[in-house]
Image (cartoon, rainbow, N blue to C red; front, top):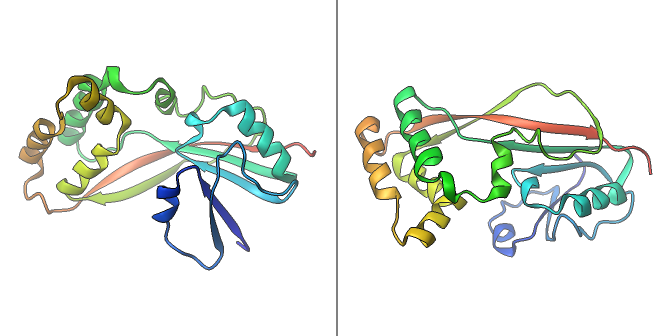
Length: 194
């Protein structure tokens, strides 16, 4: 890795980025990256492509890609932890919140397979990500969900105290860390030469 340019449309997100010697952070939309023509070997998008104007993004990908560059879109859905905890989270996420998820985010449940992808697809192995949560950290993670925020706005009530109480009965000590396993879903392709 010689040089990485990491972009996000949100200045607040970029402000949270951890500095690294080989990484240059920029505020930019994916559809208008301000990168030079034919300057990039690899374009990656983590858990965000479903929010893009894909036609404009793919035009930008073709513009900035070097000959035979790779584009990789990846996402992850719900995690698994234990049968009991998974059942509570499933009732919450696909029960209580079902009508509050933005339409764009539902493509994550399809493992990005329903996203248009106009590149020569490269088969990829399966990947998994692990992250440990205490119960308070899990509540913070849930608060980042768009479905939770939309529920609060529409219902004028916070759904999390009840679900966190139910989770707490299975969790035990709320400061005990538990490992969440996320399956990573990839769409990887080679960009035809410009």
